[in-house]
Length: 89
Image (tube, rainbow, N blue to C red; front, top):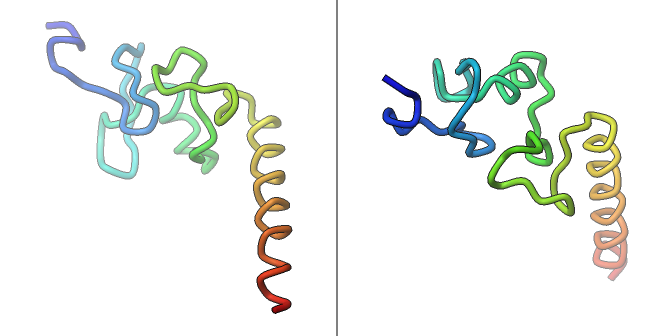
């Protein structure tokens, strides 16, 4: 029986085909191999997507940890810039 017939989909990135299904926050076999490895190491964040994911957008996601960290830092800076004027008055 193939994975596609089971209708399994990664709960993080939406991939339907992977060499191995891994455990995630929702239980066993809920994440694709790439997301499962990142989840286990504590690095699965919303900005991470495997490049072959159907939900991958280069403006919102990356499959490089360094780029993900950079994207998160930029988001924080933008958040701080937006929050400062609101805090002052």
